[in-house]
Length: 392
Ligand code: PLP
Image (cartoon, rainbow, N blue to C red; front, top):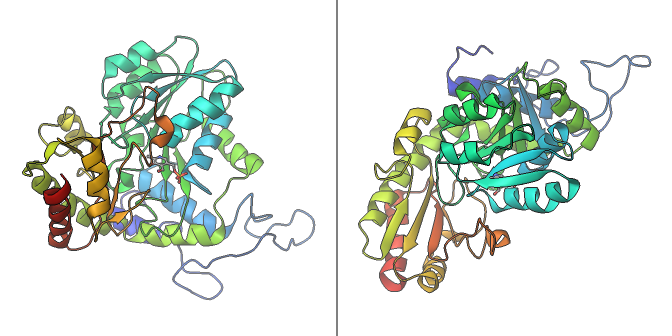
């Protein structure tokens, strides 16, 4: 599959040749742990044991690399399993990481409660502000800058190109969590990032039926004083073993085939929901990168194809009203996660971001986060209107 092909052509075909044995047009679920060897070490097509490699997972990994414009993709059992593997492959005690001031709560929890006790320190920086990222760097110790854009849940936007320059000027790697934007709306590797990570649980899988993670690398990158980054990640994927199982890989591969059309519809619906919220008297602020009033709208317009399906907003009447409004909807589902075909609503301070309460990453109590699905948008707006008219 050539890089010249369009996004959906790659999503449907990359890594997914018709099955050589039967001609099946969909990659089979190779639900198998081990493979017959033709004599010791005589592996058929390189397969030996499914932690190391499995044909269904290989198809997904090739597809992920093709969609992000990377040289290799790696599929994991969850987004956090992928993030952990990246960090363990590339950081050692004494190293330092710059972490976004607004990030998925689990990412912050990882750096604070898992990496830090193992000797990897971090500083928090507002990644929408390139100077703040520069100021957070500790020369000689910062090995990695971690960026989420747009961020979860405040929809902040980082200038990937500018931050890549800052990170590279001190020999640090730039890792971008591209979960919210997806490979369809944004390709951080083309903007200078070294590694892209995804929670494929979200838009990539797209149907709220599978948990998974992805790491995509750009070949030829070396971490200061260490071996080839891609090789280290490949080694650690197998050595740690937090890989995607065959059925999970298959579901994610199926989800990716429709990513482009789903994202177009998510964006269409989100834009209509944003218009509605911006005109509702109960709403004090709408957070969406597509709004010209968004602090980094210009950056988002430069690096994203469109602005995505995630929308956050704040209510004038505060936390109590936000909690009640979340419970008052009927078509929107009150739930964690995001990126599925169905619309979800949640209260970050008490749900997805409860783990950052009392830290620098605490989120406002009057904030509601929406994952705008692909239903008929008039139905979504009518349901929201009813909840906000009563409880906003
Ligand atoms: N990154 C972002 C932006 C997320 O929203 C999440 C989960 O919500 C993760 C990473 C972690 O992914 P997972 O839940 O698949 O481990």
